[in-house]
Image 1 (tube, one colour):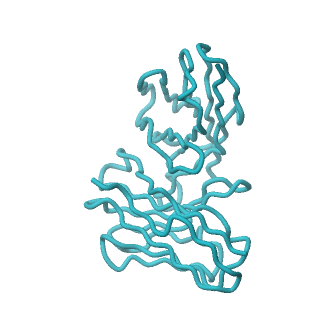
Image 2: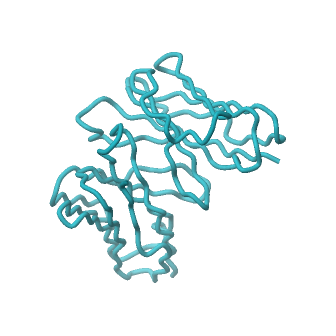
Length: 116
Length: 113
């Protein structure tokens, strides 16, 4: 199993540009999560999906952020327009179906985003 | 609102010594997870604790959960340099949509020879 795959690993972009982060969850996992990690705020859940349907997007900071999961093997997180304060490491994680997350989450390697 | 507090946030240990990291949380939950993160890397799952009194051990690390006290501990026995990393606890938030792991701020462990 290749694990949760994220791309790109690093992204440097100019303020105002659109940024798209990509995630491929582990095959068979029904849940997909997007987290953001910063020094100031730690790890925060942005949004999560169950069977490709967004369940909770209350962590999405503002309308500039959007996420989609068009099928069970792919998700995107888009920031448009990007701002310097969006600089962070963005993690995707997935979890299999089971009684209340008894298997925990498996995290991808993350995308380090720098907005200049 | 579920809050998760870890302490200490920074821990410098000598090799061979024992120490404990504490994870307190503010509302009822019986799902607690410990992760390890090396600098610039992803989060690696260490333990999944699913009930009151659960204890799991892997090598020099042992984790336990007391749901009544809302406390989990990660005990390090005879530390070695390879254990240097940041350790996070995370608690499943049963309030709201139930999908949210709330993370502590992490404990940065440095093991010195």
